[in-house]
Image: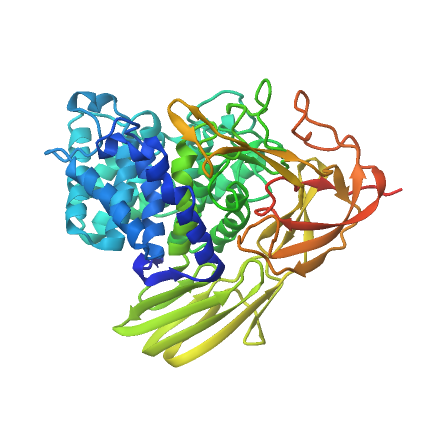
Length: 608
């Protein structure tokens, strides 16, 4: 089992730093200025939402502020934390409700604010905030133990989230009541296994037990519970993954859920909240179990699903994304989604519902703080991203710098500076890598491990190879993959801006809404499987559609492909036939995360 390094020891570099800067300059970095549910929240003395939205926002905004050493953002985060702590009640209750309302207040937000306070303490070592966290958890425990309150609804389906702050507290001081508290939560929490049969096909109704975010959160349930309680960790999460993927998996290592499980069709949606929560689960599972499959899955969703559903400038986002997405236009009649409204796939301030508005910000910062993990004798690099670690090993200073354009390039340079420290540097090798070289020499046998006494400065150059290839998808369709990236045929896009006010919430540039209309042909299939990788210069946005950093030339041919029934802006799940309706054309595929309108799953065409 590895532990995450102190987050203050990590700094992003290169394109990753640019992505975080875009997030700080975009919606996540400005929600407290433009969105009433954060700006005027009951958490800080206002009259707006006093449940999950401020904690959700802080969960991403706090690490974002500190990773970038942004003084203004740090001050704003601290102002919110201090306002929340200032309003804590004498018995430790910390959520914004009256004592009479406690029994009916869904304590999911209590668990969530506990995670936020613990994370803030990791960055600041603020004893006042830690004491507030301790008092809050003691209060929560006391009320549950004395049956003054119970966990229910969202809290019952997300009870394991509370293990995160409890583990943080237990690591500092292992008090017995913490374990007793954890056992009470487990007893009152929901058992997902009894709902398993309902995940095999879309139910076309809203339930907590098929809710995609609940399901994506629960991957870490056994790992975090059993770690705290000292129990054996089994392969429960892996079995859960295999089952969900079989019936609801997508080409980008996520699951359909718009907003409940929606099957295997490539024209169904995947909620943004589920993407960032699933990323967080993979980060935790890799740390606790060491199984590299979780890091492989993390990379696929982080480099594909996450950027695909947020605009290049990170000012707008979708509630749900589709793997094959030919337009993001409000449905004029009945929604095409299972339980989402007709605007859920539009890019905007809060399409459909505001949870993703608040929660999407945790994705990139938490990925960054997970790059390096360690034990007493080993430093592990989970994913090769441009970053820097400054830490100590047995009192000796150690600096590890990673210079790379990964995943746009499949190589990187590690520079280690150390003053006589002895430790093993472990660099994870992705499962897709066909060959691996270290300083020009072939490497075999899994992870790269260099165990030695380090002195002075040493450079380690790592390179992976892969060939662009097709991967089978349902309905005899295929997707192109290269390294951790999935590639799509981009569709020329026209953006139509919508500025308006609804329920006292203003949409105004740059945090307005957009409908995206497709302006180029999308009805294509693969004429062959001959692909050519093109390393491109790229532009100011790491995942920008107009100037991507990598592309793949492919030969495509037109096919007869209809719209989904009753929807003139949604492609049917597969073409009418796989017979070519034209000659082969050379097209440039770009990363899925860059293509806001795209065709990703396509057939192999029968040429004339």
